[in-house]
Amino acid sequence: MPEVLKAPLVVEFPFTRSLGPVQSAFLTGLRERVVLGVRTGDGRTLVPPVEYDPVTAEEIRELVEVAPTGTVTTWAWNHAPRRGQPLDTPFAWVLVRLDGADTALLHALDAPGPDAVRTGMRVRIRWAGRRTGAVTDIACFEPYDGGPARPQGRSGAFADPVTGIVAPARLDYTCTPGRAQSAHLHALAERRTTGERCPSCRKVYVPPRGACPTCGVATTERVECGPRGTVTTFCVVNIKAKNLDIDVPYVYAHIALDGADLALHGRIGGIPYDQVRMGLRVEPVWTEGVRHPDHYRPTGEPDADYETYKELL
Image 1: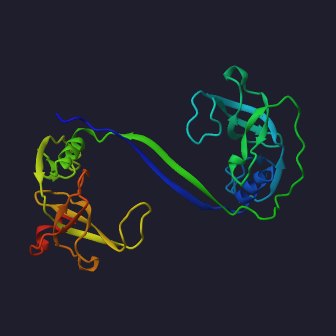
Image 2: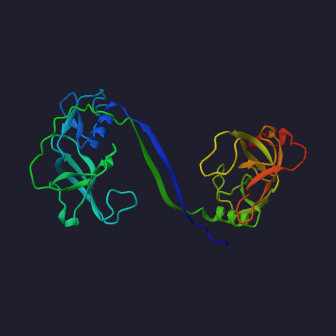
Image 3: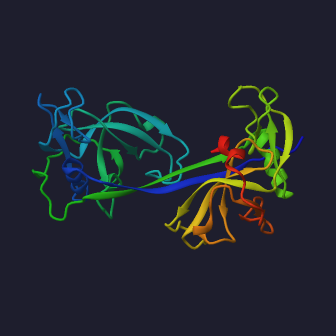
C-alpha cells in the first residue's frame, strides 16, 4: 500500500474590518492609555464594550472610563506560548475585572510561574511602548499591590480616532490526505490521474474520497482516468492573485476527465480566454518537478456533445 502522505499547511489572510463608534472609541482609548467601557440601561459597565446590551439587545453608546487596575476572576497557565501570543515566555491567561467594570477582560498576565497566580489577585495594565489603537496596546497585565487607580476622566472623544483594523488570521496545521488521496497524489507524481469506483452505484470519483458521497460505502477499486477530458463549466478570472504568476484574464474550469463521474477543476491555457467554451476537449500540460498538471490545453478534437456531460455540470 502506498505511503499515506502528510505535510504542514498554512492558511493565512489579513481580515480588514471597520469599527463602529463604540469599538472605535475603545481602541483609540487604548492608544492613549485609557480604558473605556460602555454603560447599560440598568447601570452595568461592560469592558470590553459592546454596541448592544447582551441581555436586552438595546443599543448602548454611553462610554465610561474605568481604571487600569483590577482583579483576576479566573486564569489558566500557558506553559508553551505560540507564535503571535502576547508574551514569548510562559504566562497566565487571565480574566480581569477592571476597577469600575462589571465584566472581565481577557489578556495575558506576566508572572514567574503558576504558583504566583491566584483568583482574586490584584493586577494592573502594562502598556505597550508603541501603541497603534489595538488590543495589543495592552502589552499584558502584571501583579499589583495597590488599590484602585484613578481614571483620567476621559469621555471617549479623541483626536484622530481609529476607524478600522487589520487583524491577521492564520491557521497552521498538518494536512493528512488519507489513504485514497495519498494514492491519487502518488499517481499524479507519475503523471497519471486515478480515481476510485463505488462498488454500489459504480460511479468513479476523481479525486478519490475513500467513500462514495451518494451511497456512503467505502471505495477501494482504483481506476485510471483521462488524461483527456471535457470542459463542463468555467469562469474568467480578472483579478490577479497575490504570489500567483499568471497574467489576467485567464480561465478556471471544471473538467470531466474521460472515465470519471465527477468534474475536477483546473486552469485552461493555450487558447485565448474568450474562446474557452463548454464542451471543449482538453488535455493536461505537466511541468517538471510539479506533482499536478500546470494547466489544461485544447486537444484539437471536436467539442463534446452536451448530452455526454450534462450530468456533470
